[in-house]
Image (cartoon, rainbow, N blue to C red; front, side, top):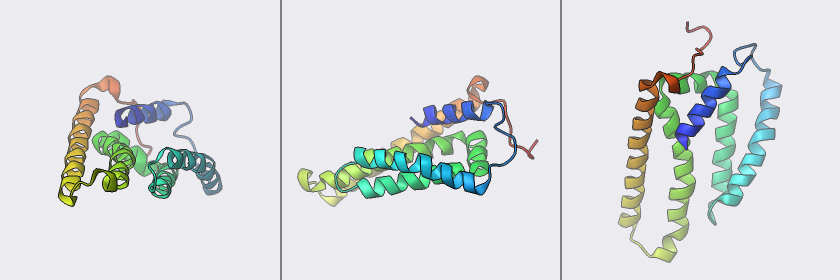
Length: 153
């Protein structure tokens, strides 16, 4: 999923006008609310029982950060795609792995060490896959955008 998101982000960066004048603060706030609130609501509905408020808040903060810290997000996506992929994957991991383990802990009756081992293993797999996908994006030029960060040419 992270690889898809970074490729979609590259597609948006390549659109005409993506490097034009900065977006005013009021428009970024309205965009954050207009995009973030529906996505947070959807994420909250898809989250596991008991984790909905946390997943919704995490989604709202993530959307706000992407829309309001566009220069940092662009730098992250262009220069360290593995980290960008890992952050996106981390959001998905937080909902579908961490939240599930916590919500199902009473049902599974696993010990804390087993839950921790499962979470640690899946987090390590996320990191390894993010590094591998980031290296793949950096290796193949057709997976990279042709645009740059204004002012860093």
